[in-house]
Amino acid sequence: SAIDALVNGNTRTLDVIRVQLMRDGKSVTRHSLLFVAAGFAAEVIRKTGPRVKRIFGRRFSYSVGFFRALASFRAPEFSVKWDSGEKAGRMFQVCAGNTEFAAGGVMRISPGARPDDGLLNISLVGALGQLGIVRRFPSILSGRYVEDDRVDYFASKRLEIDAVPPAELQADGDIIGTTPATVELLPGALRLVVHDQFQV
Image 1 (cartoon, helix red, strand yellow):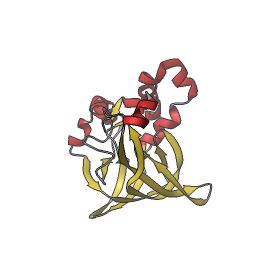
Image 2 (tube, rainbow, N blue to C red):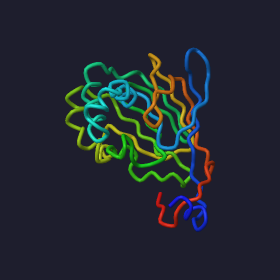
Image 3 (cartoon, one colour):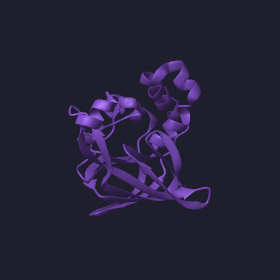
Image 4 (cartoon, rainbow, N blue to C red):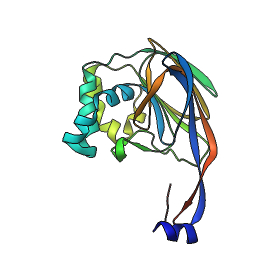
């Protein structure tokens, strides 16, 4: 119980993602625990509204949103910089993950990510056509998509994202604004009292 955790639990610290980006023409700062993504992941959120969630439930609603997003999404021209490199070009998705799973635990978006290691797990997915996206859907759910030769997957503490046209970003399932954006990790910024069986 919560009382047991307070009395007998352990203190754990978790990393927090800080994002500086644009919203309504102004620079704003937002925070996230799980992940931040620009590109297709934001379009999926746009297509996974309350009605879709109500009809299909948490387990299937994001899969429905995934296929609805296929019809409208066009990969932007991204410019991305991180601790040790940079890359530019059309990309399907840019993601910075603090934990492995997203979409209510359905999608393993950042394999191997831990919320207490002081690092973001970055995935840059090259531009894909609709058929290519559909063919890779199972691997996107399982996390094996990072093995694809069109995907760069690495760790960094900081990520700068720009795009033409400006790309929306989502954090933990909510649209939070648009590029340009700077994503940084705040190591150990959140302190929790947890049950002794708590795992990260």
